[in-house]
Length: 173
Length: 81
Image (cartoon, rainbow over all chains, first blue to last red; front, side, top):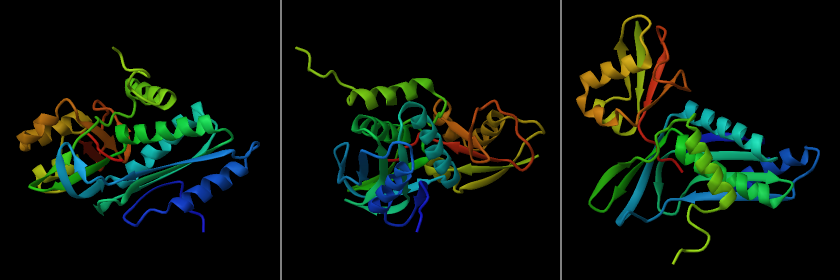
């Protein structure tokens, strides 16, 4: 059964289905896939020194899907690839997958770069929030201002995608 | 005119509701709705410089003009992934 390329859901995420989808889409192009890169974001048991018990994800669903579509359009202007993104909402336990990304491209370098770009942009603009429950309390996690047209943020995501790291390749000193 | 305001995360907690119908003058901008909201809920003013907005489920500038019945969502800094 075909699945949507972009979705938010309270159901458990299915990485295999995403891989099948982008692989089939890429196979229909003039040059078929030579690489499929996947990313799985996982609920970590620690954050900022706190022992995390669980996360409750809230999202603005129609805009989240729109955000993924916009990110897909940005990716399409830079890298030849097919991509799919599913993000989970609701209560997640430690170790649960919160977001999955699959990117298929003729060549691995483009697939790696596009995949990194997608997760960085999701963290910048997708209207999704983590409510962290930790030992001793709870807190809304607040990261980036969700300005989809901020070119500086887009450039930062691109630099991470092609450079792999915000830090110098060789530590100074 | 009446705008349906959608609130998320800590903004929703402050207002005690995820949807807040808000009356503003005809032709009001997104920013005018935000100003009305923060007048009612002064705690939201900490988001004055970090808030983003969407109108009818697409990203919007704060100076966009609104029409009666529009849905305006205010987005505190996001933390997906």
